[in-house]
Amino acid sequence: MRSRLAQGATVHTSKSRNIIIVSAAIVIAGGCLYSINLGLAIDFWDEKEYLEIARSLAGGWLFSRDSVNPTAFRPPAYPAMMALFVEFDYEVVVLRILNYVILACTLVVAAKVASEIASSRMAGGLAAGFFFLYPVLFYTAGRLYPQTLAAFFLLGALYLLRNIDDNNLRIGLSRSVLRSVACGIVFGLLILTVPTFIFSLLVCVIWLVLKFDKKSLLSGCVILVVAIGVVLVWSARNYYVFNSFIFVSTNSGLNLLLGNSKNTLPNSGVDVDLSSYEPREPLGEVELDRYYRREAIQFIVSNPERAAFLYLRKLVNYFNYKVGQVSKVRTVGMQDIIMFASYNFLLAILVVRLIFSRRYLIGRYEALLLAIYFGNALFSAIFFTRVRFRLPFDWLLIVVAASFLASVFERKFVESNGGATRVGPQASGDDRDEKDGGSPLRSR
Image (cartoon, rainbow, N blue to C red; front, side):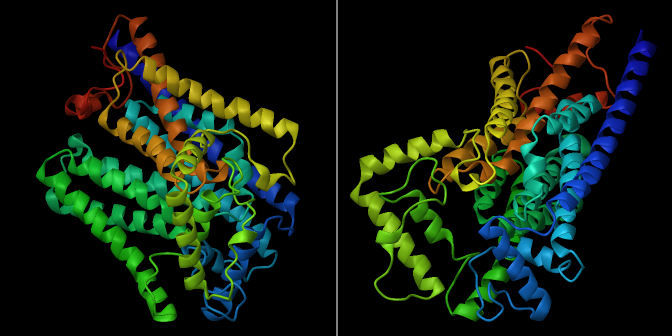
């Protein structure tokens, strides 16, 4: 019986590994074809800004939207990466292909994280499969947006975090610190890609610290200090250029006003009429950011009930499947149908997973992923919610769904083969969740 189980585990491992490799190759190959098909045209203004900043960086190390005046309006990590490739012929196509290479890497990391949660290689193969059932991730990678890079950094940071916290690794304190430094660097790069991910950093640090042991407490402090240190390097540049402290970018005030004004709707995104908020006299970039922030806070203070109700509606809109008004150039009925089916499919699996949480216990690490996902909804609604901003976090839905279904399938496989307690090459990992609330395969 044990030999049969071992053979089944080996087959699952081999098939899952092949699925992940083939899936990553399909992403890159399909991305190349799609990038070539899109050509050199750029549809959206924020894509153009990122590209102009990258060209300015490549041409003279000036972070600028017009190659003349320095700026801090956009976070630096994504245009800095783009700057390495803008000298190539057909630079837009090359940059899109680069996005798909990053997307393929993200898929591999997500599969690895799912496998470790379920202690099963099958979960990795399922995660790769779920990716293809959520095509908006592939579509978005064809745009010059930072969300694809942000997803890679997020999954990478969470993978490093699990290896720090994993009791089975039994790594020494010095190695734990080194891994914490690496995790902090990735988190810092993540924040320099999309500043709102500082919320995810804080959730992860709190999650570590709440374990209340020496290694986790030290790791949490190291990650936080290193991540903030990485960001402060950019903040120092901003202070030198603008003679004012700017943590990452000067668009937070505008984003806050876009989400909190008299003309804001729960799903209006950036399509908000702010003409009545125009300053009476021209302001510099830093002063304008502060002005917009004051106006947004004034709206909230002057209209507490309206602002609270708007916040709740934006919170609900976080789970919207529609791309929204900003993409109306390409939004068609079929796109909405695909988004509705694919996103709600993942949400449905999550609901089922929560319903069966007594039979398939939610481990400590899985609880972290859920806390980040739903916590980000609460945080994002302070500004405004939008499908594109949520996409890096939707990878967490894919990971949780894949690990849960792998747990269910493997339990059924075990029960049909004599009731053994575990199959899979990582059976020795059962103990990893004993102190964390139980393994996903273990019932009460």
